[in-house]
Length: 603
Image: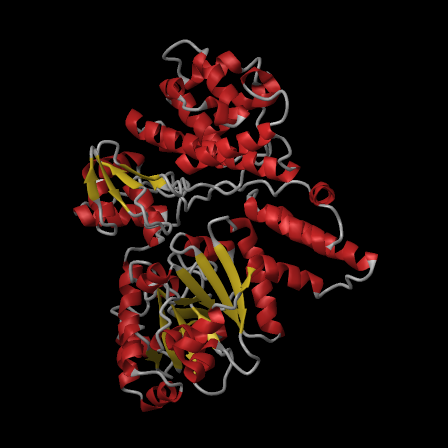
């Protein structure tokens, strides 16, 4: 675990303008710097970087945070990786506290070096092995592409890697997943190479460091593909093959093509489709989807058209649902039965593949088609089963315009009214909290929101309006905790009429506290009247105090203002959705609709 004092010292030494400026073209605009947001497509710059507050903020998509947060968002690094990257840039070592706290697993710093040596060894052996070279040439691979992806070959011998590393018996070899250490006959230990007689595909992290391998057997043999095991550096449920090599093409196309195999990625890149990545022999996970959505606004899953490919696509759809957002597109492409992406692009070329991409099914349409194919929609029983199958999928969708659109479509196919379907389905699944890999700077706008305020809500609604609800979005929790730890923040909250009533009521309560009240004083004061809120505050403070309490007031102000702005935008969107759902029938409602549209445009 990295000490918080070091993180604060590191942020004091780096300049967020320099960090962001290495990736975004910035121009001076008054006291701040302005540029095109790297996190969403825009033609007019709305992305600002503040040298005084040491924060970036996008008024278009809501992305904001410190230098650490920027590296996490832009490069797909974890919190710890971003800290290490910044520390390396300014030339200071990263201290570590004793393990046991929250955060990523610690690992021997020599792991990366060991994996790099193994990757170079495999790459050198490929040149010495005509059989492996002939196999790759037979697949249509060029030497230039093989070099770009650092493809290699693991020799047939049981302990070939012994020639590549200084200490084959080291425990680090097992930790890196390079060797297997098993008990042999008579209780003796037997150690041998994990990968033998296989084409080797190094798997690299966003900084280009080798963190694992995929190995494909040459000719017959099982398993056909083998990955590195789970290690402190590598988890196949989070990593994507080719992400490092595709980084420029992904941002240029603003689209990621997800395929199933290493060779699909390599051959697509060779033929000009450089924005392809692959899952590592496992189903698509929400971690995969989140990692890609940090970089692009569109994901196309390209799978075989057979039963196995459609099953994999459906699992990908289920992983996408909680991450769906109105500004993102998830689509599904099924190739002709006789093709995989590798064979298709070799036969049809990049133009043919791009034409196929243009015909990809949107997530909404694939969902409807997939459910419809399982039932008989001509019968009431079939339509009832259709709605029952759709229910958990609809619940997984965050509260956003896309959910409304899909609800309308499902209601139409299921021959029920939208209001009836909404009642049957219920609300969306509770918003999930951010995991430890997200770090404190991950404050991208969540697409999960609260329902429109009902009658009697607002500052004067009393205790009911302040009771923490199941699934309370992280942004609202963040505002409560920030304002409780830094009470002065609550005295300048903008646009109370457009904030969620829970937050408005909370800020009103804070304003009623004596000036300079600490968190302990606030909790003691509210314990009798708002015990649920106090319990939630104390729980959150215990978990996040180290992240928030040590912020400067300006840093807390930047996070607080950003969270309020996002909650305000969410509230505007929800009011618009509510007006559309109930139907705009009066002149007063039409005026209100136009006012909200104008406010949303300004925000």
